[in-house]
Amino acid sequence: MSKSLISRRPRIGRGSSAVPSSGERQLSALQRLGWKPFFQQQLSLAELSDCEPVRVMAVHRSQLEIAGEQGERSLALVPALASEDIEQRPTVGDWLLVERAGGKFVRRLERSSLFRRMAPGARQLQLIAANVDSVLIVSSCNQDFNLSRIERYLTLVREAGCRPYLVLTKADLCADTSPYIEPLEPYRDLPVALVNGLDPDSAAQLRQWCLPGETIALLGSSGVGKSTLLNSLSGNQLAATAAIREDDSKGRHTTRHRALYPLADGGLLLDSPGMRELGLANVEAGLAATFDEIGVLASQCRFSDCRHESEPGCAVRGAIDAGDLDERRLRNWRKLEREVERNNRTLAEQRAGERALGQFYRDVQSHARERKQRGE
Ligand SMILES: Nc1nc2c(ncn2[C@@H]2O[C@H](COP(=O)(O)OP(=O)(O)OP(=O)(O)O)[C@@H](O)[C@H]2O)c(=O)[nH]1
Ligand SMILES: [Mg+2]
Ligand SMILES: [Zn+2]
Image 1 (cartoon, protein in one colour):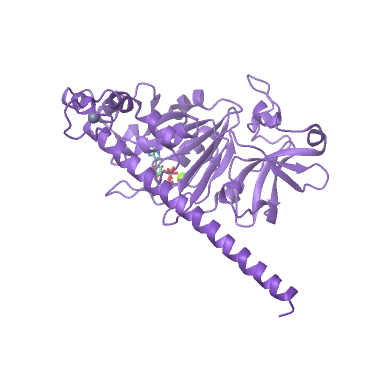
Image 2 (cartoon, rainbow, N blue to C red):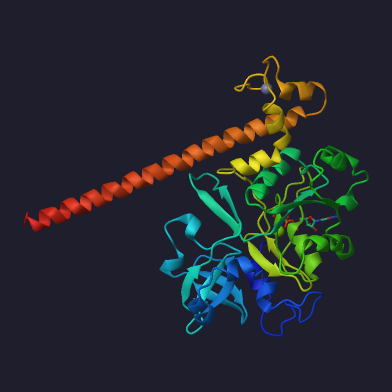
């Protein structure tokens, strides 16, 4: 059921149909892979002549799949690419420089955006993708639909500075979609599309958000139809899909690897495994942007340390009482704020622990050296 995506991914080569030879905008092969002035400006004159920029399309245990002007190939995960620091390791969407002669890895370019989450069950961050322009938050018109989860995704997307869109799939299975559309009324800045992902004509409405040269990530729980959208938009069965469980609409974690797929007439789509947990850390700006009206209200409370519970002159409670603010939204904001604080603390303790351990090893080594010098 969950076959590796990679074995099914058509490799892009010169003249391959995966990359169009013509389009509305004439983009170079690199631009179609998402190359932008932001990356170009990071190259020195020497690098411009001696190095080739390549995009990380997928990450495997011992190698990367990369794509550049010459098409797609593999790059071994040499020690320079397997840094101790997780954030320095290459992730899907990264741009790397490799030597034109010999293909040796030179360096990774600065990222225009980065998605990270707290790794489930671990005390560290995990990279999800880099250099993403837009995110299609995918949810279904069934039990999967959950405003608090959508707000969680929005926080991550806004923190990364990417454009969020909401795609509600399985509209064809739903007699009345208003229970999913009406609660979205307060999110006026969030474009929403109702689709039948299985129908290429219906999925085609998403093309306006998947423009050539743009990188678009599909994020959402398992079974919401991310791979189905990829297949419909690409016109190819690029990724395996599988039926969800009947009783609770949950997916079966069919997609196992994150990978970038170039669309023939548009941008690059990032398909990813449905995430069971999307733990948030270091996302204060994203949180403030997602719940901006609560921040504005909180600044109008009578007391600066108002906890918005039962304090007199609380503007937040006032808005809830007047029906202008959803109690659920306030609860979710509080929950996410506490989670971010907790995870930030965990990461800070982890870093402090690593520094202390590093110092301990250095001390042991220097004592050993001193003893050796003294001939002990
Ligand atoms: N009727 C209908 N079925 C859909 C739609 N979108 C997806 N499906 C079905 O839902 C099931 C799950 O779809 P997938 O594309 O595998 O879901 P996914 O989000 O990629 O799931 P993971 O890879 O596990 O994260 C499949 O049986 C699809 O055929 C839709 O819009 N309408
Ligand atoms: Mg999938
Ligand atoms: Zn208050």
